[in-house]
Image (cartoon, rainbow, N blue to C red):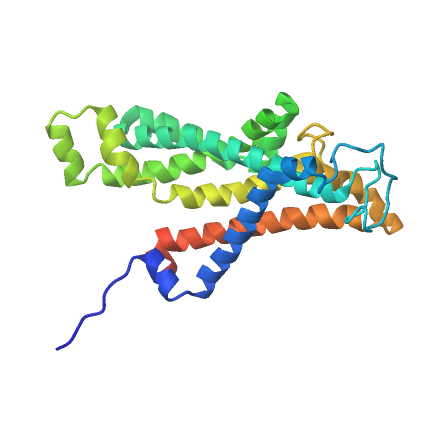
Length: 293
């Protein structure tokens, strides 16, 4: 008697026979979870006295090297680099969640409506999204941040504008192909309204790639936030943010002060790497055929 090989789901197959990509995804997941936990529990650790106040500069001497009191040293203003590096994950997480959520809330419904209705609505939305998509994302974010001003919400809006066309295009293309399926035509024949068709029959069938896009956009949003902070267009100066701290630390390199740039830059690199590895792993799970090709 012979038994045929059982076909396992892609995510279970990765757990049973882990590949290099799945191991890298796990590594990225660990990095991402660590930064999320830091962002959540930093205020509690400060209340317990385990982390110094990141806004306190009167109690410290400027440019102290790393030692027992200041593990990562202090910067030119006297801020504790260790505290500001950890609290930088909080600012990054807030902006990233706001930016990606705003772009998802706007881009997904527009993609559904455009792909389902087609016609003139589809042409207008497609032209508008293609126009936004052709503009460099960083340049568009810099322009909006300059107009809107500093602040978490303003920066999130400036960052999110370049991601809306990505969600729109992915969802629209899937909607265009799925709306011709028999179950959609059957629902329409039974008198289902367009709103019901979109929400019940199409939505969950066209968002398979959205989690992957969400994760990759989160990594890109951190880089854009760092760029805005480096240009002085990000968050207020008193808010710990890696890009702004790197901007203030750049002159220190010429006099041999390395710790003020190393640790914020390392934190920025690690968080982007973790989210990128997680996104690539999710892409392999949701789109296994693409990776096989």
